[in-house]
Length: 100
Image (tube, rainbow, N blue to C red; front, side, top):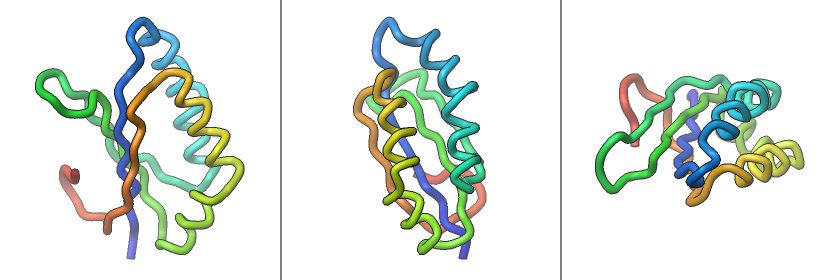
């Protein structure tokens, strides 16, 4: 069963330009190098929800668990934390459409 990793965060004030450059140059390619397939990206314009929600898919739970325990995942998310706060993630079975 395909698994989806849902990630949410808020961009640190004043870091927006650097954040977007990091995501395009490093974060998305980093996810792909870990074997994840980016599938969704959402930006909250209004309301009390995380500013960013994004998702990546993997083939199964055991492969994803190995990735989430790797030094490469730690390094990638560590760099992300230079630009964001309130980073959280959860794993859900993948389905089409918006998932939260």
